Image 1 (tube, rainbow, N blue to C red):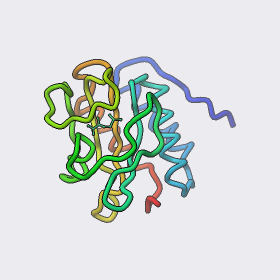
Image 2: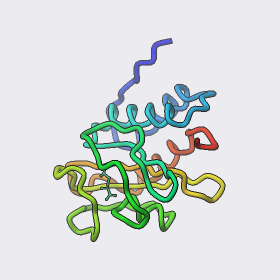
Image 3: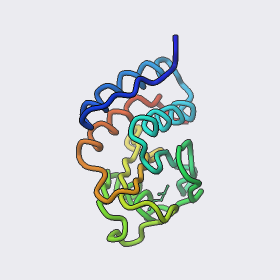
Image 4: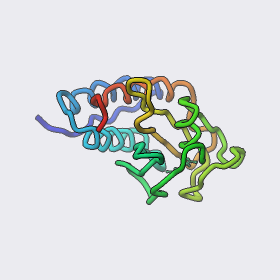
Length: 160
Ligand code: SME
């Protein structure tokens, strides 16, 4: 079977709708969370072309950079720091329409203008966060939140 991703045009909703089952098929039966995160990041980058998409894993008492696509990024983020650290601390999805208006935003890339972060929660605990950044202001909304939540649901559990 070819592993090529079938990239679709259309509304954001249509793009996610076509992408999700493909990612699901690729991850079918996979138990290695890092490998799964790597392919989720790659699929999202290929389909949407955002500036940065990837994961930070909770390791001890900090977030540590995990699989991602895009420019190099800060490696460690403390709880409560930046958008990622706050999403972890609050266990809440955070959409930032304009990072310049977000107090404490960590600018890994000066090109990033908007961001969405979703905690990956397993057995009530945040084990990682998914982070997407883009060069456009206001790039992410509740549609992204809805579908990215489903992407996260495809990751093997428990994450290790
Ligand atoms: N902007 C994030 C840091 C991670 S990078 O954007 C990849 C934050 O404020 O937590």
